[in-house]
Image (cartoon, rainbow, N blue to C red):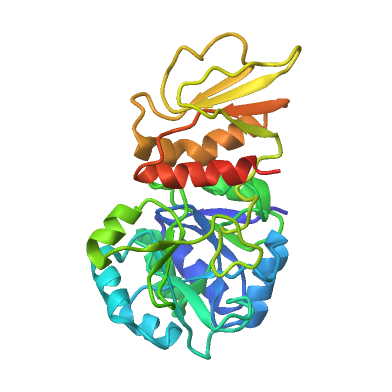
Length: 326
């Protein structure tokens, strides 16, 4: 039986979801980025259920979501001056910080690391759920491990509906790509995962950041594996903006593009346009849903247009490259 989808606008839904978290259950809920699969971050048994439901390897740490500074102090053992600057500027919002953890955070949540990834989401449903649960909530994206992240409640139900307890439906996510992740445990702040808060915005607050290697074998934060956010259908990224793909004979192909273009022709069995104007924020919001739709069309291959790697385009291309990795 699939998990019940409850309207997040109903206070009774939030009450039931908070109770489910307190009792060690799993609740999928909306954030501004993507839907998360939440559990009590202080309960190692509940965290184990998250890894099992997603079939997620235990070397990949979870993000802990909080709602106020009191919870932050219960999660993080050292709050640096740089962290305070970023928190003051970007929280609540789609920024995750990696900091030294408190002993109360189970090793399973942090993949055995002495650091924890933590963020304060801005979505009102996420905030309400954390307050109702009365505990920090550990939550990766609410999808089978490695697949395209969910941006609607139905996406969650399609992928994990039979393995979790409850889904809060708060409508489509407004950002559409996962949070920016910055590590603050070394001598210099390091960008571990790009997101909607760009490196230019971060640098304006704290100065230059290091950029981590795009591919790691042992993640220090989510989203660092070479293949991630991936469709079952093979993906090919066109190397230049507005390129026209060359299809093989009898190839049934799909096309994902950032704005209407001359590439939209009868050669393609299915076409997804991410923005009518090429706006990258609109494109990011629609990206994962469009990939999911193409992945259900029985295509031989999905061809994806590139975008300029500036601002939010860095995060979008990061997700597309991991989706296309073999």
